Image: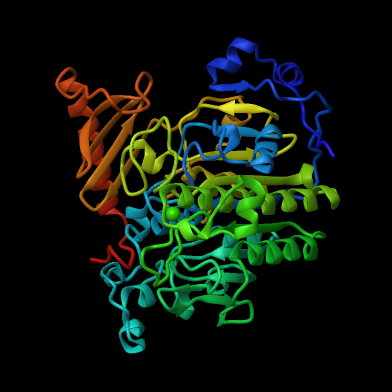
Length: 488
Ligand SMILES: [Ca+2]
């Protein structure tokens, strides 16, 4: 069933903006937009539901609506056709944990204290932790500072019920788990990556319902479990505002003890159904790994489609904000036309595919090229819910609704990244990178692929961008200390 949307002409009429002004604002209509009516928001209407979906390590180009002719994502494409596709959207760190921490706190990793991973690195050299070693290992004892206020805690004051179904990644001790951080329901895994079927991370079981570990679903493909739990939540709470956070583990590589490393996992029949020939005997070839990755993305996409269908069937699609993005750039993935991958401060590590649909507030079938980040989501959701961000806690983003609607330009002028010795700064369209994988100054308005180093040609620009980075570092260091990595 086609969903309600409104077209470019309706939008221009409503806002009084000319077509040229719309283009200037960075939001342009796609040719796929279908004409239909515009659902006006009425005063006193209940606040919108929120469905926040995060994929794991998905490449910038690994969706149909971001240019892939290889991967089938009909439901994410449908979501984009009903809302806006964000082409200039960044996360705060080029890997999982700090990116997710910033999403839920609305703050830079360097401000909220989670600016590195909570993981056991000895597994990388095949050390299997004993239970005693694991008990006191970083993966088990680190977590997001409990003084940090997460989105569900703020939404609760506005009458929302919140659930998370998937990857938590912000700490495993009791005080760090979702139910202690404002969520009402949790089914998922607590560490930073699992085997899709055993739900173990390097031999350690990780799936929980609420605060308790559970093996009830061992053997079931993880994407199916998050689908089951999210659909159940959406149906159960249809009579009051809900916040449903679905951070999939797909298409992250499996974190198990198999050697050689398996990469992404997907059901054999599903790979064959969607992508043709696949022989498990050749499972270590580059092509086989790519096929499994593509199938895992399509499987996730089908699951997202069922969530969208359920919202439609319940008559709630028009009053639900749906946001989708990848937590960081793809590792073994297609990030074209961007340079670099997961872990890098080049665009391929930090600029991610993103989509937002909010009928009545954001025009359907548009493309938003404005400079935006995941730190804009916290203030946006507070405003949408009719509540205010917590007092006295500096946020690093702003409410981006009017930008997504095409009514305003983004107020974001700069953004900074640091992953260990890898640094990055974007000021306007200039981007500076200093990293183990390469360095330089780039003009993103002409060189999105960061190929042409302007350091020697524009030394003054380089100096000013680096000065902004240094000022940001000072600002972060002056912020109230937060554990686990910045408590001094
Ligand atoms: Ca990730």
